[in-house]
Image 1 (cartoon, rainbow, N blue to C red):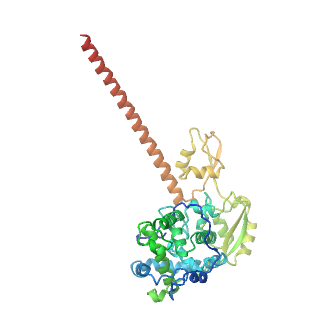
Image 2 (cartoon, rainbow, N blue to C red):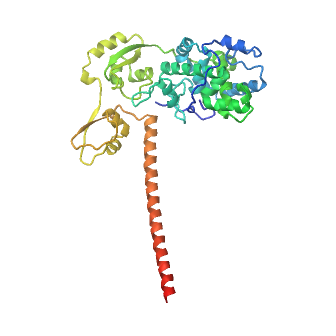
Image 3 (tube, rainbow, N blue to C red):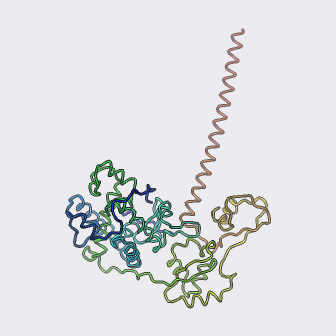
Length: 423
C-alpha cells in the first residue's frame, strides 16, 4: 500500500503471503447494486463509491473524514500528482475490471496502492500499480524473471488484480473485507474476524487484530474515490490529467533492442519503455521467440517496414568477453558491474560453474544496461551473505582458538596438581 505519511513514494524500474481460498460464500460475479441490496440498512453516500457504504457507521465516518483531510490537505500536492497520472490508466483499467464483473470503483485501489505508478516499489518489494508481491503475482499468472516483470504492466497486472479481488469477494462476501484482505492477506483477516467474532470490516477498527495500515485501507479507498470523482469539491482545481494510454501492438520475432525499436517506430527509447513498463532490460526477452511490443499509436506500418529493413545482426546487442586464467563468474560480474545472475541468464547457465580460459561469454552492453532495484537488492543480499559467512568463520576460528588455549591451561593445571600430589 502507498505510504501516504512518508516524504515520498519510491519509484523505479508487499502484501503478505496469502492462505488458500476457502469455499465461497456468494457468487463473485456480482454488481455494486446487488451488494447494496445485501446490506439494506446501509445507505450509499451520494459522492462516494457504491461498493463501500459507510455513512450510517460513526466509526467509519470519522475514519473517512480523516482520510479526506490527509489527501486534500496534508499531502495535497502529491495526491494531485496521483490524480493527474490517473488520466493515463483510469479508463483502460475500468474496462478490464468491468470485463471481469468487478465494480469499476475498484480501480481506485490502484490510486491508494501506487498513485497509478507502474514503477512503484515498496519496502516489502511489492511492485507495480496494484502492488503485487512476487508470490501472489505468480499465483495469478504474472511472470517475473530477469527480463521482465509483468507486475508493472498496467493491462496484465489489472487483469491479475481483478481475478484476485473476485476470489477475495467470493471468500468474504463483502468488498470491504475483500479490500482489507487485499492489503493484509486472507489469513490475517480470517483470523481477525474469528478472534473478534465479527463479520464486518468496520468492527475490526475497534480491535487490535489488524494493523493500522489495514484499518486505514478502506477509509483511504473511500476518500480517494470521492476525491477522484469530484476533485473540485475537495479543493483540487485545474488538475492536468495525462492523456489516456494509446498504442499499437507489433509482433517481434527474436530479441530486439528498445533503441532499435524506437528508431523503427520513429520515436524515442523513453516512449518505448513507457509503453512497455514490464521490460526490465535494454531489449525484448531473448527467451521469447515471439513478443508483442507496444509502439505509439499509428506507427505500426512504418515500424514493420523499418524493422524488415534492419539486418538481424543489428537488432540485438550483447558484449562478448574472453575468459582469462583465474577468472570466475563472480569476478567477471564485479569487473563488468553486473550481477552474477545476469551472466547466468545471458549465457543460459543454470548454475555457477568453472570457466575455461579462452572461452567466450556474453555480457550486457555497458552503454545500455542499468541495474534496477531488484538487481541492487540482489547485490546487497549476496554481499550481506558473504559478510555474514566471513564474520561467522572468524568467530568460529576465534572460538576454536579460545577452546584450544583453555584446554592447554586445563591440562597444565591438572599436571601441576598431579605433580604436587606425588611430592
